[in-house]
Amino acid sequence: MGLGKILKKFEKTINLYDVDYVRACATAAFRRFKSKLILYQLSDYSSIPN
Image 1 (cartoon, rainbow, N blue to C red):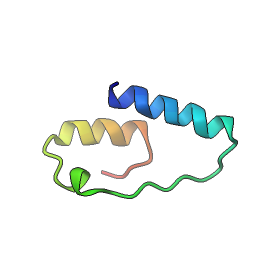
Image 2: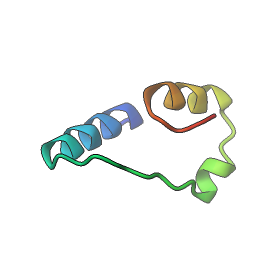
Image 3: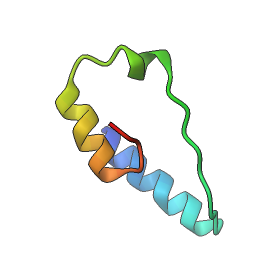
């Protein structure tokens, strides 16, 4: 399952449970991410700052 599909499913789940606030924490995998383009695309889709 691609990242976009995972995020869409997550969005549906939080909307289903009427969640108002979500906080994401960076992991070592994100800190070492090599593809800046993917990070920029992800930040466009979500509230993750780039």
